[in-house]
Image (cartoon, rainbow, N blue to C red):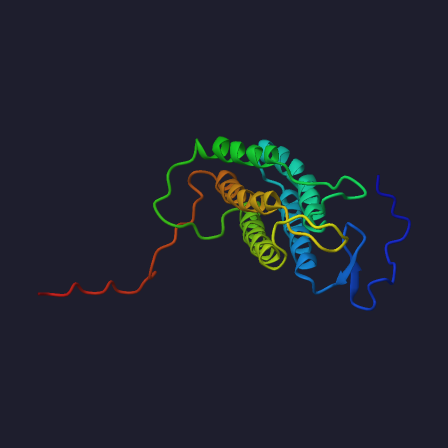
Length: 207
């Protein structure tokens, strides 16, 4: 149980913060950027819900996802350790399986795409596109964590790699958010990309 009695702590005034294993690191640490971008993604999802206009089924899904994104952030902020003092909160395969099942559920009624889709549609549908792009950025930052810290267990605080399932979760979520935007905008609401827009098509080379 979390018990917050005061929001400001002054511990970050020197540019340092604590990870979930209580080890200290710089606020510029890529781990901090990763779970911070996860938090940013969650906030963009919250705006989509607050705007209204979402199908009830999507609101149910996003309610669970918004809670689970806190799990993702906790996971990324906890280096992999062999014998942690407390059992860490980790993303498990079942959460990814659920996202994939939701992708299939929402995709089945939608028509196949004939082009890439431009962000747009209803306010909530467009906001889901914003959430999708921020989620993709969170995934990229998480991969930078993997590049820097690896995926191996360590024995001491502050050391240790990244749980790959947390990164996979972000990948699947961005796919789901794209599908959700289509489901929100409706089958007639896809704004398709027109390559070159109003430019003249290049003439074919004559042989």
